[in-house]
Image (cartoon, rainbow, N blue to C red; front, side, top):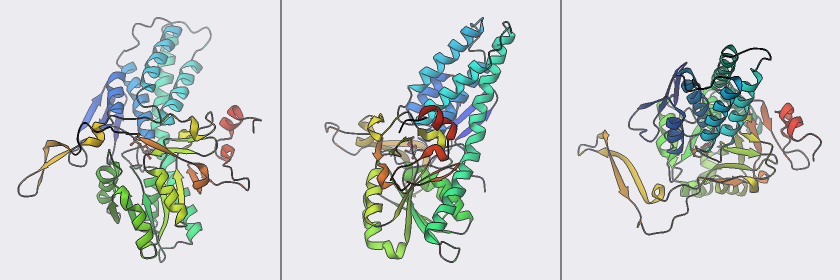
Length: 396
Ligand SMILES: CSC[C@H]1O[C@H](OP(=O)(O)O)[C@H](O)[C@@H]1O
């Protein structure tokens, strides 16, 4: 069964599903410039660490195909143009590292296409083609990466709980990490999809994930869309779910995504993740992070070094949604905005929090599940040896 598609792309054309209208309306925005991509990411019409990187990379590919670098009359000017557009896009959202990792890769790809002795315009053409190929490869690799995360995560959980189709497990997930946060299948939700496909999933619980409601609006939508047995709870119900219903619900794991995993394994993810990790530890439930290696930042040593995005107060004090008609049907063409708090109240609205590595049992990547060694540390050299050697090298 097809899953929902956040991003539609063919060379020269990029369309992005407006997630602010979900689940009531499927509307795709045409993205033709870096400015349009920036606004789409900043306003969270597209969100999710991998999806943000993919949209930024492809938006610049589209504008290059449409001639945005026409003023560049040398390889140096062409590379300077690409750099300036990518540096602009990098500022759209600061916490997820996939965007900056993709920008680093794309800049290297453009530079690697410089051929000594090749003159303009052939030299420029080679650089543009190299950028476009690298951007398209980011899209192509993401889906394969998510399928691999799904499989490694399902196998790890099956081993932890001796799960079988006759002895399934239930899991809790937070925020949205599915097809609407990636190019497809998803990361944490990708593990849930794979568990379901292998007959190992009893039930999936998803949290509402205030204030943007990625869980109630997006994850619920993905789970219902594919007929995966699921129950929506508010963020504040998670403790009761573990405490009052644990034996009956047989919750085996909390599975979350990541916006940035740093060198020691501390992980920035959607606000509300840290408290789930504390609950999981208290109740003896495994807590696993699902993240492609593109979400791992070896340059930053601990969670204290992660910049946490803070968003506007209105996301807490107001909600908006489709109007429900008198007969109970939903009118997606009309949305109502409701103030649910006194607009004079101070608001603190961090979009993410940091879960310390000691509360994380496994970090599942497309190269395998990483667990802490006897020294209590995560060693990512197992899944990204080249980057580990280049960045960490002989450092402790
Ligand atoms: C695979 S998506 C990773 C991550 O991104 C989400 O944040 P946002 O919706 O603000 O972009 C959430 O933290 C997911 O876990």
